Image (tube, rainbow over all chains, first blue to last red; front, side):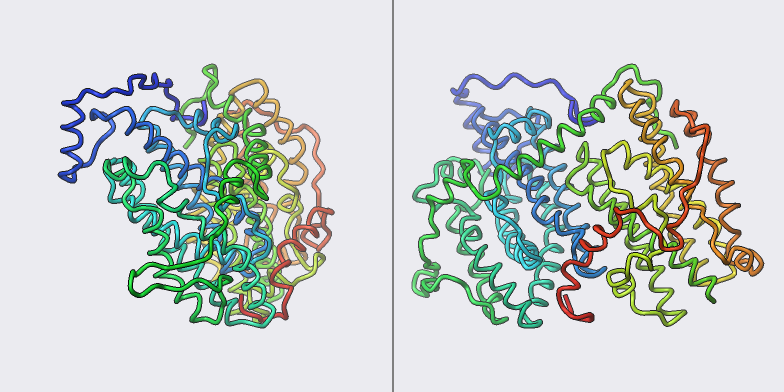
Length: 328
Length: 249
């Protein structure tokens, strides 16, 4: 019952983990040929489950991700930044909307997903459990978190599930503008007055660890990767994406006189891999399991929103309403 | 000249403050579609404020739009009090949206034939955008007014609470006669008349009643505001005023 036109019965969860061998072989052959899987096509139960998990988490990340930046809309310095930031955060909510719709094609309703978010059953990107303390944090998020997300999303847009790929293509297109506005705001602080530069350095110091966490745990301790990659649900490993991100953005940070708070960060030219200090994967685990600086606050805001909007949703669902055609 | 400047400030300040209030719904709407709608309208409003301040800067050599928006004192702002009130719940915000946007749309429609060319030109563009704001407000008001007992009661209660503030939109300026004589703007009185004619049937369709007694809340247009405006201005200027004016952000 979340929203007007999106209501659907919960489909029965696929119960059998053993898939028909012939169908599975045909399915995997299609994926190998680079075909897209569409909602009404046969798919292994686990493919469906993993996709729902992934798309749902992505959608939640957009919704929760709107909060730390959203609180700065009213404080954005000047018309230009203000207009850009509203548009940006609006896009994020729009992305959530696209992604919930993509996940719904797999049989889980938006309301069900939102409920799982609110109860903590379903996760979202860990970075949004950290606070955006100053305006500089907004520029770090807009530049580097969005950049990290683009690396991930561009890769996954070449995946196998049609509705998710199409949503991601559109999302990536919009994200490229987010990155530009983030980069522009980031550079303005870096090259501005000393206080602005210091504010940015401080923000990057605080955000570096969450940024290193962004693409997930190292491949050697990551649980889901192998099968997801075979089915083209996931298109690059966590380590590959992190490496690509560092390749692209470390030079951009250093060239404007900002320091990265990790003395061990350097590229091993022989392997092509970046080396860095352990970004504290225990903290990553603690935060993702609820014990981060803002987990409680983020969910409390969403719970407040759900509770206070309930009468609107109930009204929209009321079958006795007299007016059903939009007045135009 | 003072007459046009005064009119532009009233309009720009309305849009700025109201855009600010609308932008507070980003991420907080009762359904995601409304988050997106309010963010979109907030961008339009703030864009309209910028456009009006830009005319002031260009035609009347005032300070630049950022300075006008972020560095003026509370008693220098000429927005009506309706737009500065805190958002409260969705019912309050929706009814305000309905009441304000109808007036806003008609105002820009009237101004699209203004003898002051820069404003006439801008108004033609803006009214095209406001058309959708009004459609949005009408759709929701009519649905929620006719849905559950709770939604109906909430709509009526918000209408009662906001009615006198809405009448304050039309607080006459000291320049009414001049604006009318010079065919710049037909004046607040005509605007109010058109507004009441436009919204009455929609309110009826939403199964709601216009409060029987009314007493307009004036003052905003002369710089007198509720205690809800200063905190908004302080918040809006928090970052930009942390460095000297003119600093790039």
